[in-house]
Image (cartoon, rainbow, N blue to C red; front, top):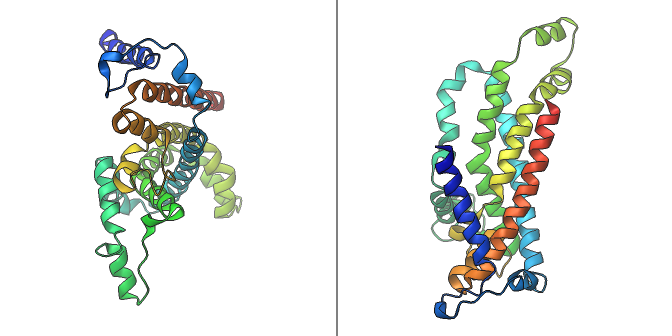
Length: 273
């Protein structure tokens, strides 16, 4: 099984690296030649590359921050009301079990300025409708909100499991000593949660690098290239501009960035233990 999994990982990865050193273009596939590092050298000249990297990092930072904050808050609220956990857990995890492309479609419909749910609420309140996806700032905000809604349950489940595994003795001793709820949270709960927080953070940072489905369905990378992440930009180059070689080079760079983040986060996780 390990050999099969390794083959399914290593063979496509090796092929992608090879393709990134060729001139393969779907518009003229018969003219493919080996170009060495040409695709990578063009990365340094690509006027859009810095922007898509910054957009990707922006999404990672704000999506993960929102997912962690909301997941932690709801996990603590559910843990404080144990009787409600079984009744509400399935409700909270509903966004996470949807296919990402469906999540993007749901939010695109909801934000439609003519027929969407947001427009209906604004009309009900007597407020003017807004086209959130029509502006760069609004589109970025909408994707971040959709990502938080989709993935905060993942963080919530990890942290809720950790909270339920804590021993009661430190909390009982703190109550006896007259510690407030805030003091207990900062000095007992949060330190005990650190490994679970780092684990959830690691997974969410890695996954937030792959935000393609929401961008593809909600904005198509626009307005302009304001919501184009690295993976969406690679898709554009490969399947719209038909430059498979350059698209593969972009994905290799994304893989390297993700690997560096993985190494840093998992190193922090193991050091904390």
